[in-house]
Image (tube, rainbow, N blue to C red):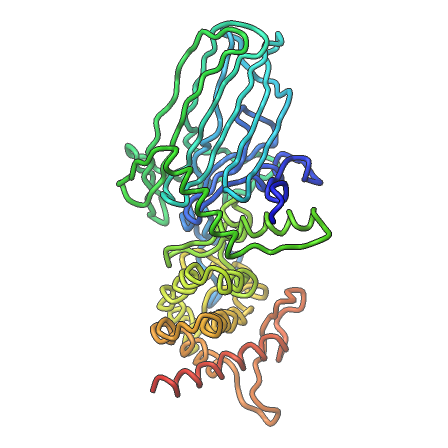
Length: 461
């Protein structure tokens, strides 16, 4: 039997209750959209915002001296709207001071409930209750249900709740690439576009701007739905319909994917939080992958790395193979760009980028970027593991060019000597030892890549 408390994350469970830590761990996502769990009223050190998987801006990389084969552009996942902030006043006096904060993330249901007590400078207190979730039925939707209670006075409560168009990056975490990515957005009605990468999103939400005469202890409630989509076409479902579906999705997820640890309740809750964010962060459309920080923040610019294939994808392969297939399909869809990259470096086959979003290489530091050629073999290994576990040979038949072309790269990049087949000037997973000859990990993974390609060629000839 599951213990309910093992699926409930509260502030008391955190060893570090910094603002950024809370916003990240309590963040919500659904593979398409992510929303940080920022406070509803402005706070220092807060980094509110939302993200869409694969929505990025690009800028030229400026080198002191450019050289052959260097990556040409940065790519940065764009921080979008702040969906959680509001303004409240009581009898014209702004509510600003946080008195009490409670949060409970129900991992079993995928729903976050929060309570905040704020007060004015004169001591008038207002309680804010919020239930929210990013829908797994309609992945374009982030839903909120608010309850506002006047605690120790009576008066006129003014509430303004919309969405700041762009969530501002805090100065303490200043990164010019992130700041520029947000600043370059262009708005046209309900459409926003990036200036350089020429991507577009559409948004759909209504502002709540109402005043209420409340007596002490009286409450008012309202719902809001924030929608982001690649297409200007939005489905409209009721709050309760999407909530019921959310609960059923997560109940099914835990039946298939739960890991039970006996004797250590803290570790048990920790592993479930990890599984929760894994499930919420993975791209599902074959066009997106898994950002370095999922959809909880723009760390590492939201780039996709080898971590997907070697650390994250095996979990889905064993428990949610349809998601694993979608992540592998992303690599299949980017094969033409990988072949272009190999050709650019005068090699045969395909070379996948060390980091990026679009499928182009974006690492400006070759020794710890492009030189980590093992990404090719990591991807091939992920396809191999998927076939071993699922038996989905039909998909492998469709995707086998990925295995062939990555293998062809090794034959072009490496060489035969008296010692055997050698691979020189590469960087392995130990990034502190760069540009070495015959890195053991790289060689063994390349060997597996070549063997799998040979087996597939024989099987499908």
